[in-house]
Image 1 (cartoon, rainbow, N blue to C red):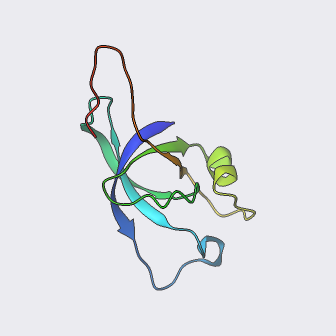
Image 2: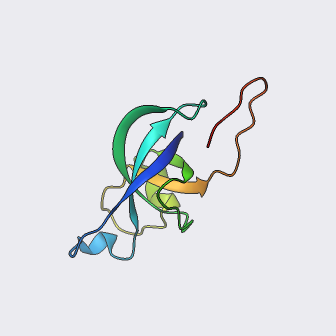
Length: 98
């Protein structure tokens, strides 16, 4: 799993049938200090969390688990899936900036 910040949305007029009804988000991994530390990636909002730009999210990064979390019954590839919107991270002696 990884912690990421939603930095954008993917909007398309046509999608593969396997992805109809699924919201796609652009995320970028962040460290526990809130700073970006990875590349931008596309993920499915599987938790129906209604995550939006600026939200910190918890993302599962594994094909089978991501597909299961997105409640997909198709064989289409899913590598990343948002499973939660993070309200707070508490690390002793360290402050997480959201």
